[in-house]
Image (cartoon, rainbow, N blue to C red; front, side):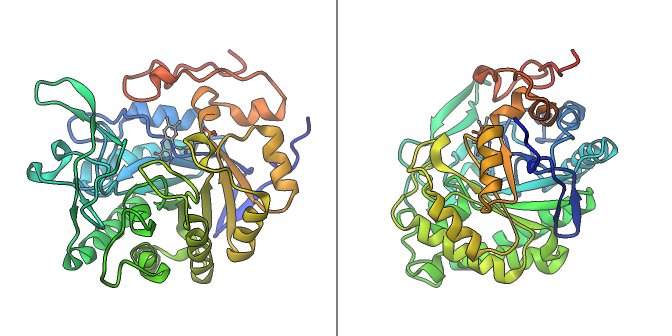
Length: 367
Ligand code: FNR
């Protein structure tokens, strides 16, 4: 089938993207150790996928406190910044554009990841049910462990969290990234603040919709003040349940945030649809409400193929569609979609951790 709309260039902020087929953020847990540093293996993986309209990197922790899984890359040390610079230079040399996803996991963590082995932090001291953190045990064995009960962040600590986001965004821009994407989705810290279950605060950061959205908007404002709103994206996951998030009210919350982000003129809003990890599917009417609320580039992700993505663009609600698992298995996904060629099948057993196998060894069409 023809996918003319997906192959049409798109301007986001001040950046020209060659097409509207984006690579979704995908945690692959292959940063070099010690120090969770992006290395040549990661540069090779991303550069193989540089024909995407925009690559959104795997989520990258903004601090040690913000880490919840072993071997994920960070963006808070000089070594990590230098590692990302190497990635960005190679993606740019291959003609690609790339956004760094900024991550603080909040309560989806474990004391083994925390500074001094303390409790992870969250809006309130409420443990995420049925949620795991991936750790390396003291004897060296990697293992999924139930997340710890977090401690509630003190009001005085919140400016420090905002400052960590800003410092990481500045590092990202120094490393050459075209955008940063603030991870407000999938049950992590900023999503925990938005959520009526995880957030039971009685101060200015809890309770009303306005209060629950405050931290996310402060983070966005502080980053935009330093790097420009036209280089900022945000990811949200209305109706997502991953990380023990509540469905009730989450659609309304995301609409409120979308409107506030639109007023700030950020570059793009990236919606992770719930169907990949549970939750009630979004309706087209709801996507249209997001479209009306937010004037910048609007991107949806989750369970799309070329045909459904082209139809979504044709319906007028989206400017681009992001693809996750298809990009894991198909470095040349854009060419394959353009030619209606067969796709490689992703191997779930190599999604997280390991090295080249299941990472940089998926064949290109010409192979
Ligand atoms: C993800 N997803 C994800 N989302 C995110 O915002 N940051 C991340 O780091 C990750 N990591 C991640 C790893 C793996 C292995 C998978 C499969 C998924 C969610 C991802 O971006 C996307 O929303 C889903 O994969 C649904 O899209 P597809 O795969 O159906 O196109």
